[in-house]
Every structure is written in C-alpha cells, then in structure tokens.
Length: 396
Image (cartoon, rainbow, N blue to C red; front, side, top):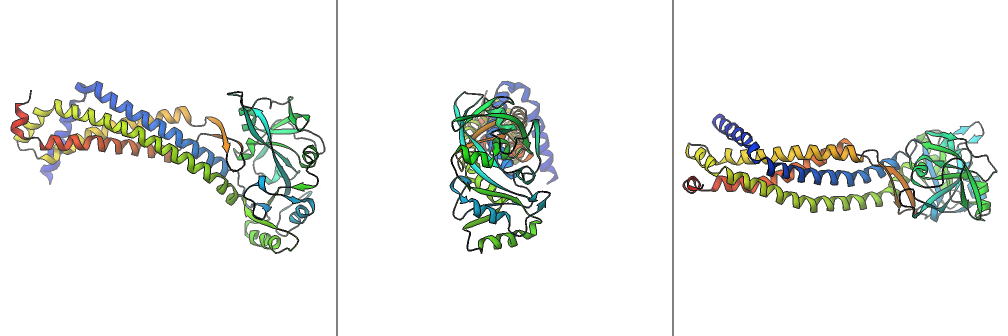
C-alpha cells in the first residue's frame, strides 16, 4: 500500500511538472469550465434571489386572510363587513390605534421599465395605516408617507430602481387621474419593495371597487395563537375565508417561478457542461499523447497502471478545480446583488429582486466543475494505463 502511494505521488508530480509545456490547451480547458460554472451559478442565483425576496417578506407571527378557494390576492375578494369581522378576531396583536391588521386591495398598473422602456405590470396596493407596522422592517427612506384620504402614493425601493416615473415629486396615472409620488420605502428586501402603496379607501374610489377588499394582512399577538385565530374565522358562518401564515403564502407563490428557473438553469448548465467535457477530454488526450513515452517508461520501470490513472485524473481535476474557482469568483463579482425584475406568474405582476450568489451556489458550481474534470480525465487515464508498453515506447 505504501509503495502504491509513493508511485502515485511520483507520477502525479511528474504530471504537474509538465503542465507548463501544455499551457495553451490547459488554459483553454480551465476557461471553458470557468464559463460553464459562471453561467450556471449566475442563472441559479436568479432563483435564489427570488426565493430570498419571498421568504424575507414573511414576518414572524404574520398571517394573511383570503377568500376561501383563492390562490392569490388577485382572485380573492370580500366585502367591507367581512373584512371588519376579520380584524376583530381573537389573537391579533394590539397597537395604539387598534389591532395590527390592514385591509388591502391589489391592482395592477402599467409603467415603463428603466432598462428597456417597455411597459410592465406593476402592483399597486391599497393599504391601511397598520400596514407599515405589519410589514416588518418597513421604513420611509425618502420623502414621506402618503396622507390618509389623499390620492398619493409611496413606492418601494425596488420598484423605483426598475421602473420609470417613480421618483419623489413625479406623478403616475391611476385610473383616469394623476397621483403624486410622495415617498420611497424599504421593507427589508421583501416583495413589498416591488410595489406601490396608496390609501385603500382612496384606491377603492379610483377603481370603483365600492366597500370591498381582497386580503387582510395582520400580526398575531403570538405565533402560538395562529390556530385560535384561524379557527375563529373558519368556524364563523358569516365568513367564507382561508387563513394562512405569510411564510406559507409566499412559499407557495415563489415555488412555480423558482422551479422554472432552476430547471432552465440546470438544463443550460448540462448542455454547456457537455461542451466543457469534450474540451477536457481533448485536453487530457493531448496530455496523454504528449507523455506516452514517459508513461511507458515509468510502467517499464515497475510503476503500476493504477498510479498512472490517478495521476491523469489528478491533473484533470486540478484544471477543473482552478476553472471552477475562477468561474465561481466571476459569477460572484458579476451577479451577486445585481437587481432585476421578472414576472411573478402567481399575480401576473412584476417582482423586483437581487441576484443571490450564496455559498451553497458557489460550492455547487465548483463541485460541478470537478464532475466535468473527472469525466474529462477518466477515459484518457484509462487509455494511458492500457496502452501496451512496447507500442508506447516506439511512439515518437
């Protein structure tokens, strides 16, 4: 066993020492693998960014109430009296002005994107005063909050960055009127930053919704009181509603988009990975061909086939590891924190998010690079070990 390890170390050392002689082909293989890893990590960071945006939107102890059978706020709806009964249910946290519950409307308006100028569906949400306390980490970062009863809006930080016409002092078209933008808010990087907010009562009038709402967002006195709150509403014969935690709601909302991007990103990575494997195969076959007589001489001196295979694989894995690290680094520099917008299929409105190149994705990219390197080096390694010594020694 010790002798085998010594042979592996010796042959691998010779293999690494000859790398400068094949610098061009080795660099080509490394850069090919780096490109694959960078693209794969970049695409998958979109899905991670969307998931991060959704999960950060869910506050501890926060709940949502929709009409029974509704999948999203767009398909939900109930009257003002029903909404009032929901805000009076037991278990809600009490603030200075009453329960921390916001009866809300959700509509869509069109605004041009800053990057392309094309129109996009932007969510406009009518909220009540408690909304700012229900959404954790809510903060006005520019301007002021809209005045209740006035046709004014505040815009999320993400929406302002991605869509035109949302600077403080500008106006947007809501229905047939122009409403001024009076403030910009942040919400801990959550989905609320993709939205525009106004007073719910004023929005009802602007869209002729009467005394109706689509959802109620609320904060419980304690997460342990969720079942009490839910049972009180679902057992009330006057109501036809479903109750869920914000974490459950946003997890369901993000799943379709997350899965779609993950599948597409993985497919792209596999297709590009096949090209990188062929590049690695070509590089390692070239390396083996250049070292044919060297390998044959070592085998003639008593070196076994196993150390030869290990040395070729080690060289291939080293090139793949360096390429993977380069690709992961490039992805992190180019994509991490980059902001963009995409369509939320659940609400058919835009959602702004930041690419999230996290440690898990970087590790996945490097592991994928090593898989490419292993496959690319395995067959050339087997060929090097199986070539008859006499035939190899005669090759020039």
